[in-house]
Image (cartoon, rainbow, N blue to C red; front, side, top):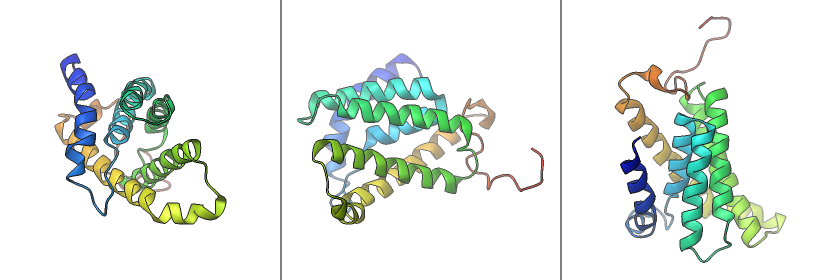
Length: 178
């Protein structure tokens, strides 16, 4: 990805997130494009690049939000690091493994954010998980799958990814060699 694309993505994230995605809400929930982008970049390009994009986009979100300064920076940076590390390690098993992992990561991202901003009582956890956070996790995951498939198709060779493995494969059968 050359620098002009990086700068364009960086500058367009906030307007796209706040204006365009208001029009594509599903059940009152809009996705977290920065989270999806950071995950895809970390998964396809590794821990260092994913972490740096997470820090940059999280910092940009913090600058334009009225929330706690540094929270999005920290959360998005950690997501980039985790996605990069696990993309190299074991996310190549199957598309189902990837979906389960991203739903869990999106839930964890939002729950940690809520915990730091508002705190929550353990009894309220069930209500939170069945509401907006669960819907956002599903929405984010659908967008992440689409983004990964687009990146996958745009790549002329599937082997050109340094990370990510064979996302569309059902996984290796037990007892067989690669």
